[in-house]
Image (cartoon, rainbow, N blue to C red):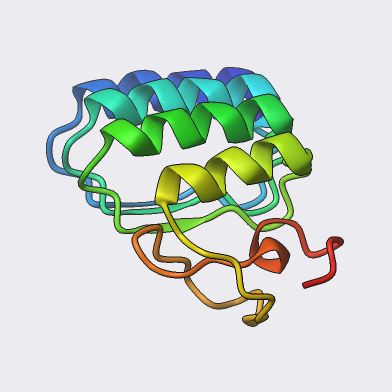
Length: 129
């Protein structure tokens, strides 16, 4: 799908008022696609579950998602596994969710709840818990 596809999905999310779940697993959205999806999350008030696993969102995408999460109050499940968020992207995601990191590890297939606990290994499996 790539960044262009991510931007198209983001445009649709801004206008959609019925979709509650979206799975974008392994679509190579990249940083630009992640930033576009993040911008759409600020305007979308129906999406509850979003899977962005394995999309190489990068640090910029992670920071954009984190900023959007501060404004979006409908998203309850988010998967950001294997997105190369970097330390800067991971830290702002953790801060935006207001959660603590206690070193525990959860399996990669577990669904993330941004209003509940999240661990560094959930964001980037290459970082030891």
